[in-house]
Amino acid sequence: MEAHREVLLKDVDDLHAFILELSQDPSERRSTIRKAEILAYARARLEAGDPEWDAVSTSPKLKKWKLK
Image (cartoon, rainbow, N blue to C red):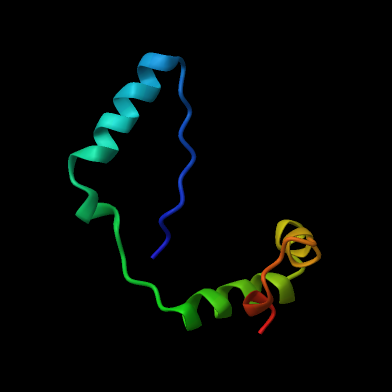
């Protein structure tokens, strides 16, 4: 499942409308993802040479479990 999207907001009223939309039924926006799936995704992004993930992986704030 691909759940990312870009939201372009014109103004504060758009932001408020978007927040209201998201708050209507939070159960529709949730999915269960296991830690192993997160780690596999991160590993795949690093192996693909994704520049954002490369930057994260070298950050001094990186938590050790993320390196497994």
